[in-house]
Length: 209
Image (cartoon, rainbow, N blue to C red):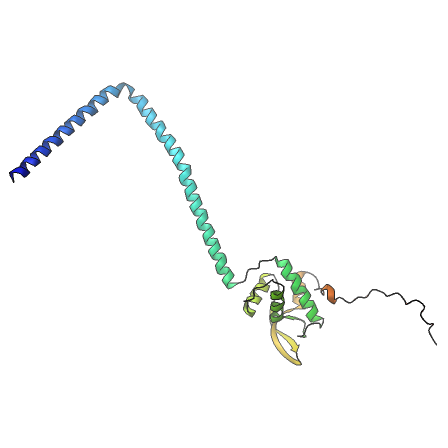
């Protein structure tokens, strides 16, 4: 117990001496630097301003980068969500519309197996997949969303005759597509009939009366 009391007294004395010495040192430095206090204050203020100017753009840049990163992540997440709900094309819409124009014109002209005033969504989906314009995993609902995203009107019910039987199917009507495109849908080049006048064969026998 006596040792503990002695240790406490010695510690208190050491602390008192340290405080006294520090006070004397600060007082001496204060008197020594008193004539230069304005210059020292100016230097400290200038140093603080320079440090603030250097640190502020870095902080703003870091915040801007973080915000841009956050916005990019949000946009990417939104695009992914939108892609899950509605297909997003990897090719320009014009390419999709060109294909649909030819298919609908061909269907309305009777060149397709399903006879009607346009083309069925199911047939358009198969054709778009064959051209690499649609994903192989899409169903009818995804195809309708895809076509509507291209600015193409899709009717929920259209009459088509296939294998002698008439049924209603979702499809693209040639009149609706004409309104969407601003012109009458045209047949693909390979289905356009050749109406070029043919020259008469040489040395043809004279016509008999």
